Amino acid sequence: MSISSSMNAGIAGLRAHSSRLGTISDNIANSATLGYRRSETSFHSMVVGSGIAGQGAYSAGGVRSTSIKLVDQGGSLVGTQNATDLAITGRGFLPVTTELGARLTDGTAPLFLSSTGSFRLDNSGVMRDPAGNALLGWPVNADGVMPVTPRDKASGLRPITVDMNQKASVATSIVNLGVNLPASATLPSASGDPEAVLIDYFNPVGLPGKLELVFTPEIDAAGATNRWSVSFTEQDTGEALGTYTIQFNDTPGLGGTLQSITRTSVEGTDYDTDTGSFGISIAGQPVSVFAGFYGQNEGMVQRGTSFAPTGIDQNGFGSSTIIGLTVDAAGNLDAVYDQGFRRTLFRIPIVDVPTPNGLTAKNNQLFQVSRDSGPFYLWDAGTGPVGEISSYALQESATDVAAELTALIQTQRAYSSNAKVIQTVDEMIQETTNIKR
Image (cartoon, rainbow, N blue to C red; front, side):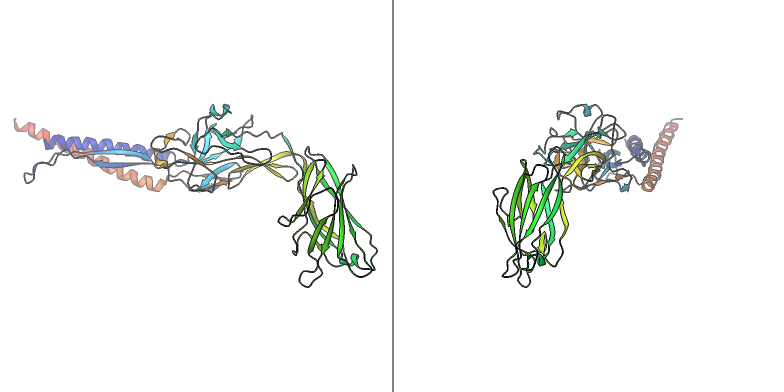
């Protein structure tokens, strides 16, 4: 019994080390595969009986092996020249779908997980990696607001599709009044001449217009008033948009800063001390005018003898064309337009599961949720347990070639030793057979 069990143990050893050789060869073969997660083989003894104590009988049980893919152990990141080469600096996976799944735009595309990807737009505008897998994301509303979407389902995800020929514009919604008004203009000896400035703005369909701002000092023979009137008018239509009286401080420590802003017209809205702004409406288009906070050196101030409207600007842009795409650490995919503004088109979530090593491995370095991995959850990048998205980067293979070659030598020696056991048992059986002769 002991001789035959020794041979069985040797055969089990050959099988186990053959399995380990398979994982090592697979790891080495994928040492240059981006995003590859290495496999590992573990050995476990099998005990079928140890005989009766003191009688010296022993029956060898042998060994068995189990292999596992270490999905939770990723490789290092390497920089690239492509803005949509994506990797994750920490835990989590990118959501992707197959080439055929990208045709499903109703939320039914199958969800797969990828640790990295070199994504580029195909001829249909779908963002795919070299294997044809499409990147998934949440579409962002035209106003830049992220809609509420389910986090434990993939129904809100859509294949990221970008039309590089689309036009976009940004309607003006904020005007910043960064201006220095001359304190000398409110002295009794001043001329009282107004100061005017034109501000470009853009309407909701991207057409330009001009706002005329007129700053008029108030003169009083009794002394400096430190008071101005500012009026807003649409230049082309002559529409009056609002008139405000601005009072500046002249006390030590606060001299030249805003003291009060009072609306003196029917048009416009009152000054809000919390936001430092008041509102005007251009043909129904609301615009917030930031004038600054009381007692602060920002926005409108009054000092010296010069009129300096160098800080007056607005946030609108005319019709523009996409010239590039960017992805930030939070997973926001922005279109960059030729007039210098950006618009968020999609947000790429990060997929996480309780047990990454329980994921089912698929072709092309993809993984799929399984019963062993637990249910998935879609996190915003950089929140919860997941890492941030790194643009201009790819994740290298997790294979350490030097370690794998060392393990290969150990496996070869162990395999040879098990073969030697079988050879020795064969020779012992042959000697037993020769006794009869």
